[in-house]
Image 1 (cartoon, one colour):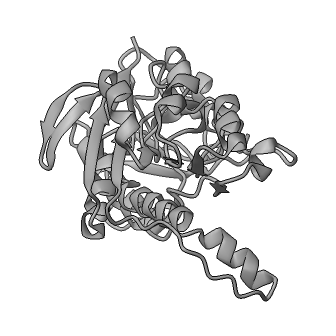
Image 2 (cartoon, rainbow, N blue to C red):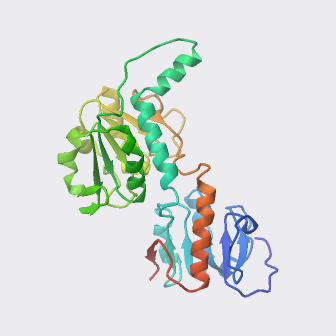
Image 3 (tube, rainbow, N blue to C red):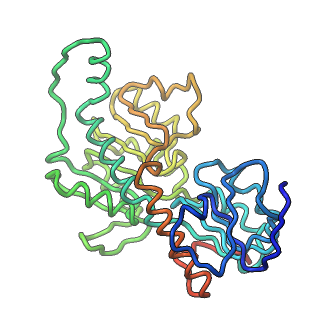
Length: 320
């Protein structure tokens, strides 16, 4: 661990982005840079506001938590907090866990639409043909006139629908944990999935990973999808039962486009790599050029609230 030479007692913030690269940070806080390296920038016990390094894996992201005896806020740069929630009992009573709701809406929704279009129009097949120097015209499905089911209608799900709007879909159906009415219309409860799945040409998963959604897409869920339907997962890999999905892909009845898998990273030789009708991207829904400006804006706002002792955004849990 590196030595802490600072004599300041201002509230200390650990940032995974160098503080000099974020304009407008509150001046009455102290900042230290840590992006998951082996050495800590200060004694973790001094950290009051911990911004979790982005996409470094659970072992790295949670490593300092047991030593952060004075932490008051743990802020992720992901919408999901499944890596941090199991460690909430390590934190001092009252410490708040905040997610990054809204940060990845544009980038993840953009990738979801990319996967839908690439899979329907078989862009991977055309790329393979190009590599082989072969001209292979095909008649492929369009997104126009298709029924799309969005499972997990939060801010990202809403952003996905925004991007579907110009594509002349026959309908877009929304599903969330509980029924409600959104700006674009009715949102069905998860309990309605059995009656909604048979009509969907494309099913897009955007739900967070929770105890309720782990394995949600099991053999029964997949069996209710119509023949030839496309499953798109930009949520978390464990939302889908991989063995059940492999069975459907192997039969040729369904297709899939996966930005996330279970296990992840997907190891070499795993049968998903060579399953028919599947397109795989390596969890790149969030990391794009859209990430950094939105991450900086979120941190500026959240740290300003923290410095002024104002209510924080996106509090998802608190240590007891």
